Amino acid sequence: MGMNYPFGHDIDAAVQMRKLDRESRKVRMRRLSKAEATTWWDSSHRRPPSDLDHVVGAEHLR
Image (cartoon, rainbow, N blue to C red; front, side, top):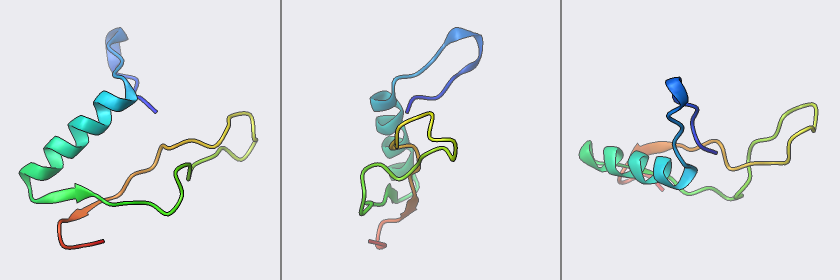
């Protein structure tokens, strides 16, 4: 996954997920679970299915 930050400062996917989880907790939210691990793919099928989309919601949501 990993975001492409400007000026050559990319961030690893695992680091990005930890950051998302940490920031979400600050506002009493969390990353919600998914039924499938790889839920994104491009329509041209040039790239394999990936784990690119994540939903953040209130802690009481499942």
